[in-house]
Length: 145
Image: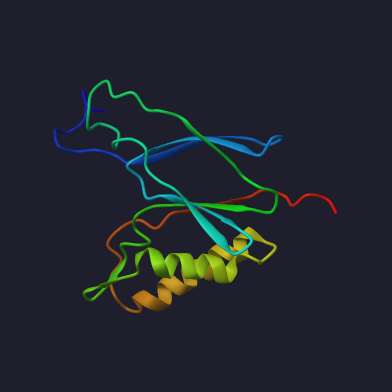
């Protein structure tokens, strides 16, 4: 991208690979908003650990590893959610976290997604959308009782 893209342009990204058996996530976060790992009402951030793609030619990205506990939910999203703006006010990370925590117990991830995006829509009202809104949710099955 740094060789063939427009100068001064870059792309953020979150790339992950999950070992379903072990519940391990191997990931690189290249300047993307921190993914959120929700478990038992707690949120842990998977912060960016590299520069956006295309910024530094030949940059070497380090792969990080984290455990996804049984029953935990991973949320990866574009900056169009926390940076959504109504007037001078932004949706911000705090509202996103509140929406995720409030909806996380829903058994169907489609319901969690709908609830979070409904909160965003309510916040925005008639304000124009200025960026993409992408929300990926993954939940590790809870351990059998």
